[in-house]
Image (cartoon, rainbow, N blue to C red; front, side, top):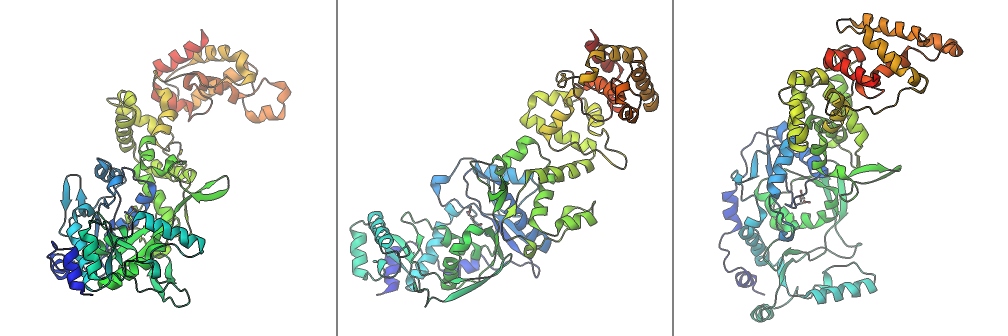
Amino acid sequence: MNHDKLAELLFPRITKTPQDYETIYPPRSLPDGAKVTRLGPSPTGFIHLGNLYGAFVDERLARQSGGVFYLRIEDTDDKRYVEGAVETILTSLDFFGIDFDEGATIDGAIGDYGPYYQSQRGEIYQCYVKELVKKGQAYPCFLTEEEISDIRAKQEANKENPGIYGHYAACRDLTLEEIEANIAAGKSYVIRLKSDGDQDPEKARVISVEDGIRGTLSMPENYQDVVILKATGIPTYHFAHVVDDHLMRTTHVIRGEEWISSLPIHVELFEKLGFEMPVFCHTAQLMKLDNGNKRKLSKRKDPELSLDYYRQEGYVPEAIREYLLTILNSNYEEWRQENPDAAATDFLFQTEKMSNSGALFDLDKLNDVSKDVLVKLPAPQLCQFMKDWAGEFQPEILPLFEGHEDYVEKILDLGRSGKKPRKDLVYGKQIFEFINYFFDEHFEIQDAYPENAADDAKEILTKYLETYDHGDDQSQWFDKIRTIAEELNYAARPKDYKKNPDQYKGHVGDVSTVIRIAIMGRSQSPDIWEIQQILGEDRVKSRIQAQIV
Ligand code: GLU
């Protein structure tokens, strides 16, 4: 077989050589040890937590080492393309503080290693396929879908591995004349790799790859004649990955563990193309506990897999970043305890410290982390965040914040000073529900008075209103509540009530709960006196009054 002739027959229009591309995309001049990483999402319009998790690793590795983090759009599967998807990817990641040094942008691209859309790289892939054909390492395959499914059925019946290999690779040894005749007859074809691997596990070479997260991965070599170029002239993931990561000079490929099974294919392709392999870092799947069982997060069942979920709920991006770091690196929490006020970027992120057995994602834990993050966020910043979030997701409540920043900041700061600050605030939606009684339009009585005090409620509130002085300090204010309690035969101290429960109707706590419900509509809240100071005298009085009549 004259392979050169075959290559010209298949790719007459490809005139550039691999050497040309080596010149166009030279090795990057970066400091020693600088890492080049990339995110390669498909533009399906759905960007999920797993993408963000991977993007964090990419971003940290590149930024920590003075390297480059770029965005490549893997749009070779046009069936999955969704309009505006690139914008969604960029804006979602930007929200979480992830930005790129290079690559695809909303209206084009920046950088010298493009095109960064795989759909625009057809000629480049074809050049390398042509090269493999020239070396007799790839060939056109004319098997029809029907023939392939017959092969699969036969393999199933014989309990053999599925795929095109060995004697099933019927087009491996076609002559140039046969190929010419097929093409002349208009038969459609793909290009397959002519694998050198042995399908016999006894004879197969064992390949070893040093994974940045998992250490040595050993597995049998590839023996499948996988498709590298589809009939449309578009490459498969395997081929595009190898060519792109070489030419874009990626040093570290961070991708999901679902790719480990195709690693032998990639190793064979890197070898055949004569490219140096990047360091592979296969990340663990994000898992969740479901009724005590660990399972993968699912797009269908778990809204928290979607990044939109966090934006709609109003999570502060720092909280998500902080939480992801705790699941990304096993020593992050310890570091955080020792460095409570340091920027997260001061932490030295290491792939070796990543879990390789499924990272557990737990919303409750995220909420705890979020509380810790929010308690440190100054009220003006939190107020601005609430405005941005409301503006986008609950515009009807924006007027409550806009122009009332002083009021809102006081509300958000409630109980947050002092040694043991309250950690009530978790995320936008929850925060608004937590504070909405401060706004008359949203104030409503949600809880019932304590049973033992319900009959006295009006009397308690009448006395409260009569003696109310907005200028009272906290202890003067509470003395008055004690007095009301005593007058109505409630113990002025809970411990007195505990000692002699039969002597009282209840204790001072029941009396203050009545007041709390009248003013806040709920039986749980931060300190009543402090809330009253924020609400202002008129609002307090009118809320009490409303419960008396
Ligand atoms: N386009 C691939 C995916 O979305 C990227 C995998 C990789 O990072 O290599 O799964």
